[in-house]
Amino acid sequence: MPPLNFSPLLMPSIAVAILFWIWISRYLFHPLARFPGHPVFAISDFPLAICVRSGRSFAVMKEMHRKYGNVIRIGPNKLSILDPSVLHTVYKSAQCFEKDDAYALGASKGQGIFFIQDRSRHAKRRAVWAQAFTSASIETYTPYLEMTINRLMTVVMKNSVKGPVNLGRVFQHWTFDFMGLMTFGPSKPFNLLESDDPNHFVENCQEAAEYFQTLGEVPFTFKLLTYLPLPNPIHQLQKLSEQKIKDAQSSEESLSGAPTICSLLLKAGLSHADVIDDVLFAIQAGFEATATVLTFAMYYLVSDQDILLQLRAELDHVFGPPSPSRTTPVLNYGILAELPYLNAVVKEALRLGSPFPGLTRVTPQPGVMLGGHYVPGGTIVGVPVHALHFSSKHFSPSPEKFEPRRWLPGKDGEEKFETDESALITFSFGPFGCLGRQLAMKELLVLIATLVHNFDFTSPDNFEQEKFLDGVRNMKITYFDVPLMVQVKSRAS
Image (tube, rainbow, N blue to C red; front, side):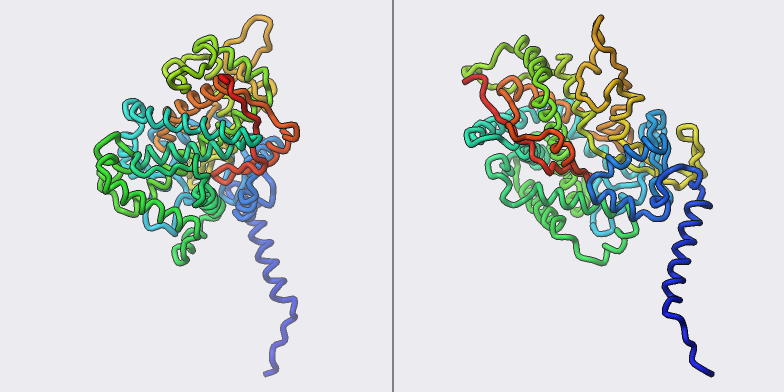
């Protein structure tokens, strides 16, 4: 029998035919084929993963919704829904949708609260965490808050003598220090504000989040990682957590004083691996989101001095001008919580300072109606946070503009704003929602008010505002490729 001679083009042709069939079947015959979207995203999850890896997926989602509509297909089995009417069903209700496999870590021995997919198991862990975020518990953290804000102000003044201050980096170090005290207690603090993070804790957190966010778009890769060593940033963070847990276990101050997150987790009898993952999440989630909103808030305030001066006028009216003789420059939260313009500034910072593509969930069987559309069971869905916050249907006019007045009652003769408060979803909500909302609001109100009351802020002549916004990237954690450099001067001097 003569040998078979295959054309060298046969195998490539077969491969092309298989890919073409996959594309045709997913693009034309898949249950989600009737939903609009870019054709490339219908073929595979990899295009979205590449988009996420670029850090600009939040902007891509906003543009895709502008082009294709409120419900778009962003993966073979994935929809993005720009409609606040679905928030209750997907996220808020007691029977909210469970998390999809983007949360199914394969490379970790433990399972932190953020990665628990099952609603009932998550509720049990959440009950442990909730003890750290009651009003009474949050009040016990006030000394930590005031102490770290005083340290931040000292660092800002010291650095301002040398020139413009990188406020974004200062905020990261402040929130990291504060969350370290909340999580582990005061026995061995991080003190990144003074040390400038020589061990690269912030950078390791950023790289770890980038790793999980990117691979989460292609969940089967997590299973492959079960057989591979952990990337170095994650390994370093786990070592840090182990050491901090040992310190907490040997410290009476941490275990018997104010309820730290670590002490609560240890007392709950969780596995060692679970505690490691949970304390890591506490630090990462607590430091990054707040630092990001603070950076955006100060960017917009410094960029629009009229808004900054109006906020300062409200603060001076209540507290008087700053004075070197005052016992502490940190302003009282109980009073700040009642100030309308300050609260409007914080809400607007939360709206424009959330460059997130959204949190995904999986629809239950046999399917559900969402936004007037039938969505099959097992479909991954999510509401795009950034796109919703920039939607003219919910925030008008000029949704891209920082305008605190949109959160205040209108006055005769002033520009009228239409604001859908239900569309502000920075913290998420429901059974899987953010437990730290009350604490984060306290941090934002107190620090923004204290800074604006005590310092003058101006932009350096060479600071380019558009480049700052163009340099924002998000991969579960936000990068500012253009640092927020600000000139600072004490008002009390």
